[in-house]
Length: 376
Image (cartoon, rainbow, N blue to C red; front, top):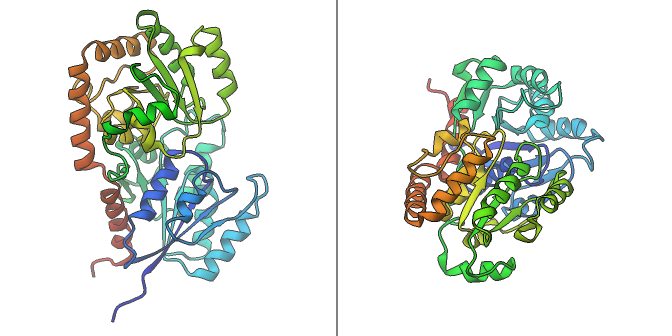
């Protein structure tokens, strides 16, 4: 006799801008609905990913109007007791700390922590690492988005290796693909000159993403290539300071702050290069999007990024934090367009082969089934 689909609840801190939210969206879009009945809940608010998630048709809940109003705790308990989930899959710190112990208390058989970044040692919240370490005592399994993140979980959070797996993020290669025919339309949409060389930065305007360095690099490039334009897509608490910095550097007229961009796939045709200057990452979705869109990449040589991209083969990966190194590699690709095209072509081939959202979802579901349908 066939059984009902396994019930899976994804829990995430919020549905604001972020790579974890993209991963969640892709896990839902590509889920095997014959085997899994999917639901999702965010601890507080709605955010920019609320409507895209609603469009998938899965039941979606928000459990509190603000993260300082913890109605999400009793809300989660009531939900888990009422629905009888087989899997609770937690994304980001608060969900791991709050939802997973509740899931254990409610005797949910499989409790997954999806670790998106090995940033606990640099997190300004002193409680982050000990709280995450404590919460992982209730994890049946931990999924890490990179080998470096997995090593961090094992070394610093003391999760046994047999209960960890690396599953690299995946991207929707149907949505993100090269579209050179849309270049003019995209340039017009964001008021960018048709003949300009445009370098983009994408992400939350926070300490982690280090857009202050992005602007320093921009100023250095503009000294010798004064017609380049830089665009920054994203929102965050650093926006006012970054706008002021652009003015101080004298480059405000060459930098566009685009704010939140709802259709990221529509922006990539406007870009000639992606510049990522992060201080730390797991495996940023932005990198995979740019690879799939055929945009050459200059990015910090961080562990998770270097697991996917090879410096000098499919990207330029200068050492993190050295502005002169970023400037040099950007100029190299600008002055040698055939080299930039070769990087982009190699990266496109790689992302299509190894980093699709469908592949990521099947790998995650294989972990579910390993526990739910063990070999007898």
